[in-house]
Image 1 (cartoon, helix red, strand yellow):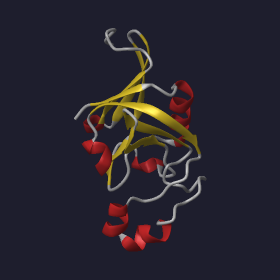
Image 2 (image 1 turned 30 degrees about the horizontal axis):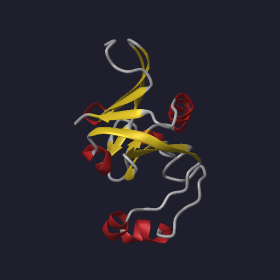
Image 3 (image 1 turned 180 degrees about the vertical axis):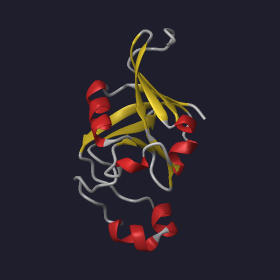
Image 4 (image 1 turned 135 degrees about the vertical axis):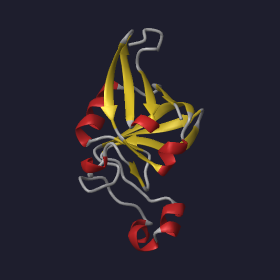
Length: 146
């Protein structure tokens, strides 16, 4: 393990379906993830500026346009809960003060972990996102590598 990476930073490797939370010099916690189309396009540094427990969810305009029968009924949003696509927790990634619309979040579909999925960002199991959520703070830097 490298000891030149800043503690309390997150590193996303979409190609390998994993992220690392650096907990101390030379130490990290590895999480396995599913990566959506959006997550495969995220690169560079972002910052966690918002954290939500049982977040609400609204499909993007592109999702509704692409699959209106599937996403159209949720155009007004969906309250947080066990069936919500964002799962138990969400970490919102920003560049400066601009929301990138990328998220690290849970999923009610744990069988998607380790796969490229059609929509979404970076998904962890609900147990793993709760662990990561509790271990990170607002201001944590997130580095994404393509």
